[in-house]
Image (cartoon, helix red, strand yellow):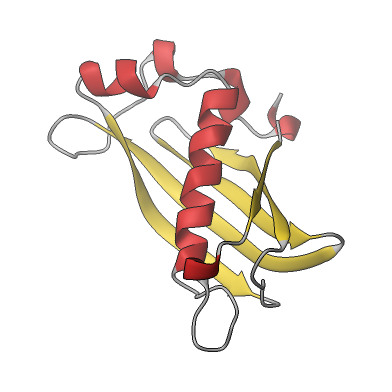
Length: 134
């Protein structure tokens, strides 16, 4: 499953070079991953209430082109790997046909102590699996 989030670049997200600051892209990617998880039926409130969490263990970002104030960008998110307690989501930020950012995010499901743990069935949604895994 691929999830797409659209947003417009706000002035305060831009740096002295008049383009989106590199650290702001982390916020964009985080927001899009949250929306991706909601779209696949993942229940954050229930997960927290049950004493679990989802941590980012690694993130790789390739900055390709700048995004500028007031431009509309799209953030695509899709799963490429899924294990018992972790997975990888790839993300791409685009402006029209231009790829601005490409990212690969490794996440891990954790217990209340922050230790990796197998995802319980109620949180192990089919949308977390890559399209070619089944």
